[in-house]
Image 1 (cartoon, rainbow, N blue to C red):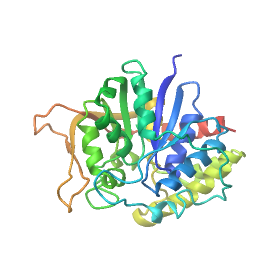
Image 2 (image 1 turned 180 degrees about the horizontal axis):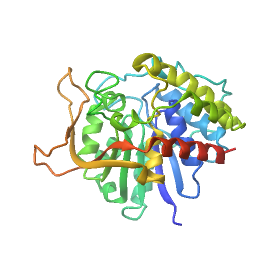
Image 3 (image 1 turned 120 degrees about the vertical axis):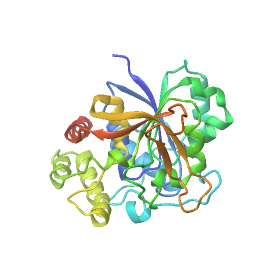
Image 4 (image 1 turned 90 degrees about the vertical axis):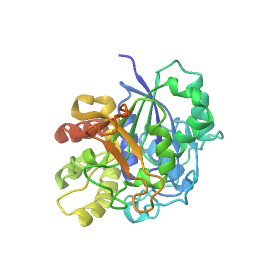
Length: 314
């Protein structure tokens, strides 16, 4: 089997952490070339810290981690400590990471890595604001043919937004960057709130993560127990969604997901609807599709896959 080469662009965040662990626990299928960090859930100094913590937890202190953009392209940074806690990874007790960041800026490394690659050979998985990816595409448009596809977590149409009535957090933090990425011509698969809210963590499933009896399982149970309390309080129900791992799960088992090729644009002018992903579901604009918008998931298959790959890191 040929491994898929992947760059994960991230702002950890507990759900980002699970996405990273899912990828690192799938070494037979995925070759993670590096992690590029961006400001989002928490500021950049914490997202880079958290990425190193998670790689050490996974037994991968060799992973290359790069600090990227500390601010959105045009707007002031909005963070989400009310969801993720003051560190972004609240829940467990964490030791400070020993591994070091790479010296190179994330955008420079992303451009260099893509330019050196064959066409269509590297998949980008952004699970935070799209500042790094948009900056790379703007600075070096010739990287676009090198990208097999961009599988991102962001947006919402049928479910609305989770930071404003209209906008999902990752897109809202840097809507100008999101607009650039959706207009880039690179094949895009979007994992919006429409699908992530179709797969809710049960208390039994979170307990099964802890029951793995490993440090990975214990830390993940503590992270998820802290993380899902926000969505349970906000939305009701027995459990919250696990957003970011959907991107990695799609790479591993696309058959778990159903979507539709559509045209997507991003609102960048109206403060009322800033960051809204406007999805032309019925083809009313006659614009050619620029993304596959995922709306359905085999929830049991998704949570079974995540648990299996967390166990592989034991």
